[in-house]
Image 1 (cartoon, rainbow, N blue to C red):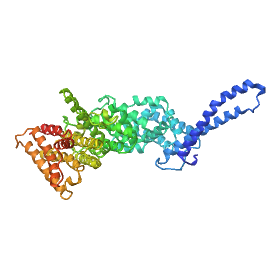
Image 2: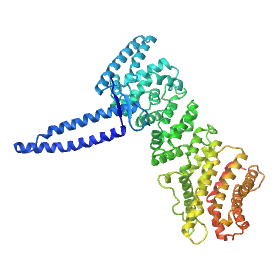
Image 3: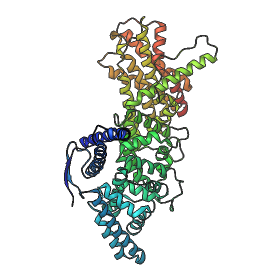
Length: 602
């Protein structure tokens, strides 16, 4: 008979820690006290308090165990998001009562399973299901669950899964389909998975159960994590093991791989665990994200399930910042790797990719680090090139431009390919471009002036300008991987090239700004002009080389800003200032535009 309880888990956890502290004090004090009493003998003046200390320690220990058991059970019975006092009727009044009931139920299941093995009939399997039904309402109790699993053992535990699959889902040879998973969750496999989750998350399972991860068939492991919310630690162990198994280790390697789908769904239900998995297991994360894995899984829904898991793990401000950043870096390295099939691969492109869309949706917070990486690399390359050419005073990279650790380990070329993968999907491309545009506009560079004698303001301006140019450069470089029509490509290229124009316009003196009234119309006119230059080149209507067209495109934009200064009656910047403005506005864009046009071809 169970007990109705009401417990505040936070308060209970605090009390458990306080009792642990008390036990520690008693454990450290007791040996010295016992030694002092023995040494003093009959001269000992105090009372016989050692016995009381023994009883106090035992009271703390037993109370801890009982309270933790009740809290663990209650947390599994009541939704975890509920705060304050939790109330429920526990299945059992004591842990010993729970253990006794578990052993009885395990014996009944084992006996029914023996009869099924003997006759292999539907009737005898129904007897197994009937014995399993006794677990309902009990498996949330960790003491019951641990005793049940201990009595069954890993071998019988796996056999119950396998026999259910053979009788109820015989066609699912590489993991349960969603329909079969639903039935399994409502039947005996769901009860077994919940029992495992209760016992494992409470730390009550022995090493033989941890060893099971290495030997159990893939479909049993994927069902185990799909049918019940397992601990993040166990889910990660299952994922790393499954993703390190040889591709053809399954008995039917050409069947649809629902194991991958079920693993992705389990991670979608536990975004914190997935975030840490992405951060700490780059090799295995790469297998999940591999374009060949996605295309060859045979399960179209796998990509959507993985996208939902990524969306949960990479959402801005979710989880631990440092962990989320490492997760992002590993995702970028995987999709943007040199041999990535996401871009230019034999398996084709991803024009309607839910993965691309969720990555573009959540990318805004890390754009600054990506832009810094590109800007710093371009500055260092320029420095090394000038130095190799014998320049006495090569241009030093701007201070405070480089990305911080761990972003300084990310290769901008990888970032460019990553952007290229995202831009294969038009929806993701639009989202990415909007995020980059907002990043550039959000720099609030109006605080600084590029002209004058104030070095701090000038350095700050050029620092931001280099990052703006670098962001446009990444977008342009990535666009070379997008399989669009010439018109779509020209639209994208012209739009991204205008990004620094609009950006620099924020930082010239007020009188020289492009007038607010009609500004959009003016920029649209410039964009149309740039687009025509690009399409003429792509259509072979101009004799100019890619370098010539790129230089003309860059100069057109800067000339537009200088014309705006003249039209507004502002004194023109000097030749040196014009050159500095031109460089700061474009950053490394000239090279990126040239490469983009060369790659596209004229």
